[in-house]
Image (cartoon, rainbow, N blue to C red):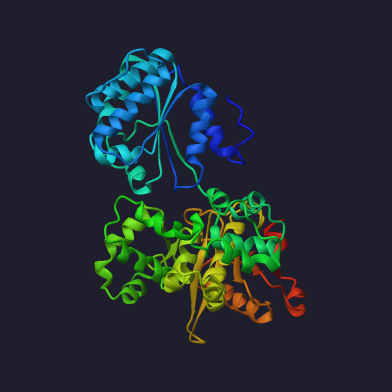
Length: 478
């Protein structure tokens, strides 16, 4: 196994799988696929792996098929130090040679940003399938690692009837840092400040570089930090949210997709709500929702109590921030009016960005093993209908035990999350009522823990309730 380079922050899970794949180089034929949104450090990881193992690395770019073949030929020539430059006529010839070199030299071959190549050469996955099949049949130890950021493209590489279906021995998705790890990466010790920063930039490692390593000096510096970084048209972060959408291969009418994202970011998460917001029929936006899901920009989460009812959420915090704060005032921001825009948007940021983001963080906290005594089977949110009092009780954090066939679903915890409000007995009272109603519907609530999550604190009455667990920022980042 190859030790992780010291320059790689965290990513122990990812490096372990990459190192295990590299350990098989020269022993057996193998194909690996690494995907993830841009700026997560995929290139940094696979390039480091190629360097540590002495393998070949090629980073594709947006180019014609002819130019891409030329760039690939040049890179491979330099790697093997061949005195006569390669001049491949097509990808069929190039891949045959690449697999032969990998088997002969027992080296790892890495092709990064593979979607750039398959976009102009759609036959390439089929060619690779043929070569990996030949390597397996002939027992030639060729090793190829494909890496890419276009999630809709990478997700189809191994799906359904795709040529490479069933050929990969490793499929790794490089995800953003979780909120706790992101705070460490940004060197933020104050939990409240950490939540605010994470609600803006999420856990994408590259964004720290995009702001030149600028982190808030303390809680009192957050407003100024927002204005001098993400709201400053002179920083790369300013236009990043727009680029994330435009980089996806399946996005054609970006204006309509931005409208769909804006609808979800501002709280219109149902299909009907999205359609009404953008002025379309619900049946007309199915394709757009599917594209955004495939691109990992949207995710659909069913109501845990009513699976037929789903709510969409924006996956990337920076996209939510852009849609709520930046896009409505884009012209003013481009003219350098960050202070005025931020002053006008601070309330929307708190209600539409921070609040929902805090709820998601609380659900992430509840997914950790043993938070409620055992490993959860499912964590989500749901609505409980109280017909007697004619109201809907929204439960922000629902934690189920693993399902057992033939037995009632056991609820480990019901929780409510409030970012900017001190929580009191009224909040726990709603949770008790929800627990009572769910018990009447057949759920097992005998050991259900009521949990209140707050970014501001709890009043004395709530703290005195022994059957309620209070979770503050210190515990979230504990």
